[in-house]
Amino acid sequence: MTVAWSKVKLVIFDLDGTLYEDTHHFEFYAEELSKKLKPEKRELFWNDYQSILKGNHPVAVGKIYDAKRDRILTVNPENNNVVKVFDWEGTELDEQSYYSGSLTYDFDHLIAIGDGWWLPVAAAKHYGVGSTYDSYCKTKDYMQTDEFTFADNPGLRETLLHLGEKKDLVLITNSQADDVERLLLTLKLHGVFPEVISSAKKPQNTSKHFQELLSRYHVKAEEAVSIGDNYLNEIAPAEQMNMQAILVDPTGKAEVRENTKVVSTLSELFEEIKAL
Image 1 (cartoon, rainbow, N blue to C red):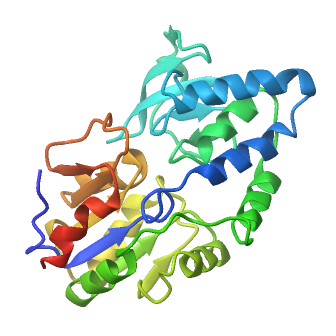
Image 2: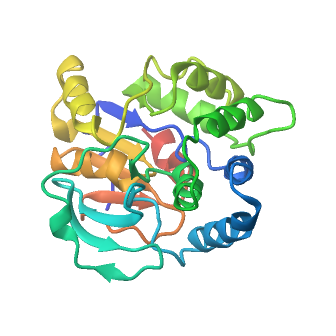
């Protein structure tokens, strides 16, 4: 699949996992979450979390975790209906009928695992952790210290600025506005995106944001491209609206439609963007 850049007028980016590829802050987050567990459960938590990272566990990016019932769900991305249900050990259960109609995610009890932030959350909640927000805030604070540094991505700012000269750029992220501002400064991407939509509540509000952007920028669906690292959050809604889409998938295992381009890192797009 190739992107029809000549047709594209609007480029919509995700932030976490898309504009930066580092993951060591997730380890810090997992450590903070483990501190909330009883000592006898911490080793179990770490064993499961490592299994998740290696792809040897039913919890994975793109799945849904039902924290109330301790179930991992596979949904149809076109309507958010449950098609498969698994217990924590990965045994498939005949429980689809329990989940009637389209799911509504709440980031606490019915969690869309949109990126690496949510993997340790699922494991922590499985072992009894309630609120994870304080651990998330500590991790975000850590990411603003001198101790934490992002791996350099040469050419990222210049490439995006070049793209912005040719197309309209919008950033849509679930992160809060103050976090986004600090992250963009840290990544040296301040001033790159004329429009930033924070606290976007993807995936449940993704299609709504896309529709509003298409209307505001006066572009057809096929003239917009969504770039992100999560199929449910950024790609499936674009596919359903006949937008173009680019999935950043380091594993290369994601299943996408034929009209979606898959890259392992954003930098794979640099050469074709510079050629515009």
